[in-house]
Image 1 (cartoon, helix red, strand yellow):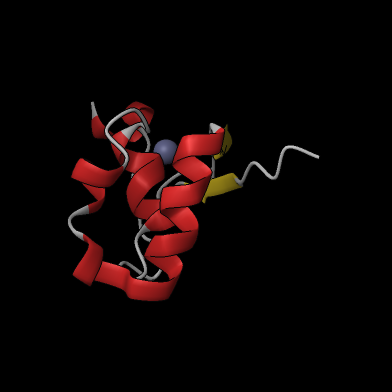
Image 2 (cartoon, rainbow, N blue to C red):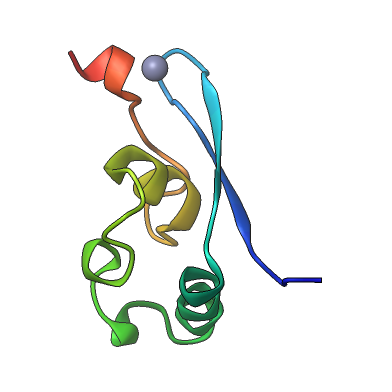
Length: 74
Ligand SMILES: [Zn+2]
């Protein structure tokens, strides 16, 4: 077991669902983030490699899962 975290984001506009598998390093940061929230820092700094819309839909505790996929942005 690697203990890697998978996060799921669902576009609030079209409903498209995307899964992102975190690396072990990212997973560790994610578990810390669940504990400490924004005290840990901004999620764009904590997870620079996760696509922005997946970050806000799948990680951000304050967005209520709201996110817009790249298809709907453009
Ligand atoms: Zn969309």
